[in-house]
Length: 190
Image (cartoon, rainbow, N blue to C red; front, top):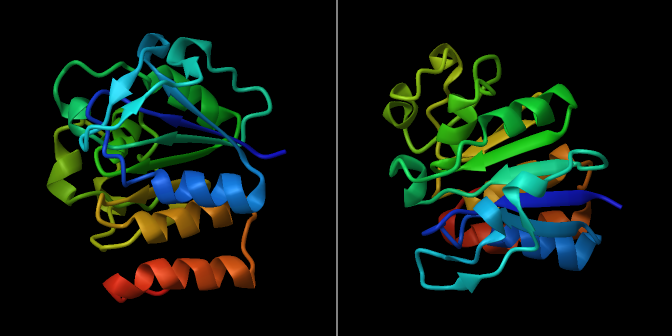
């Protein structure tokens, strides 16, 4: 069974990873879990209270297929947990890594974006992270996948979902139709 963990913080952007988690869990049988610092409940930017299944400190990389960082204002507040070592360890094990919105900043700070094509909310969003991958930045409005790393601006949850699922080997006509339906509002291909 495919296993995915989404990292959440206080004020996480609830729309950014919701489509992936719902689609993956309901239609493709992916075992999805959520993790926060200390396993504490967090409230999204939209006011949704989430009680996670595990603490960041308890994440075991054995048998994990995807580690995803949801964006949110906490990543730039100085109050977010440092997950750099966890992300580097996951990358060393070839676990798919994904970050959307300010989740891309977290990947950059960990050095994950130094050698892969990537995107974010804008190049300036990553400039202050100290990462060495600026030359590989893609100035696009949709998700970018490269070598098992998926990044997207916060406005691209549909293409983010598509690229994360593809990176896990999940792609079929039903998924294409489903994502086309969600992406139609934005005029983006699925």
